[in-house]
Image (cartoon, rainbow, N blue to C red; front, side):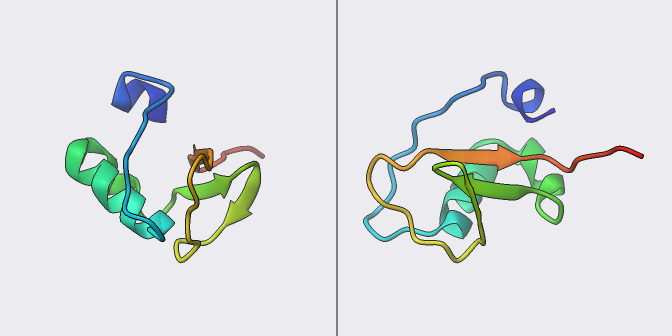
Length: 72
C-alpha cells in the first residue's frame, strides 16, 4: 500500500542530527500528502526493530514504514 502511494519502495531522506521518527514522518507527509491519512495507523521500525515516534535516528539507520496489518 505504501509503495503504491509513494511510487517507490525506497527513499533517501536527509535529516538534521538527532531527528526523530516523528520528524521524518512529517517530512515524508509534506513531500507526499497522500500519506497524511495513514498517520494514525502507521508503525515504524528502525534497523528491523519496532520503535515509537520519539525514537532518535542515527546516520545510516534503515527505517521501515509498516502499514496496518489486516487478518482474521
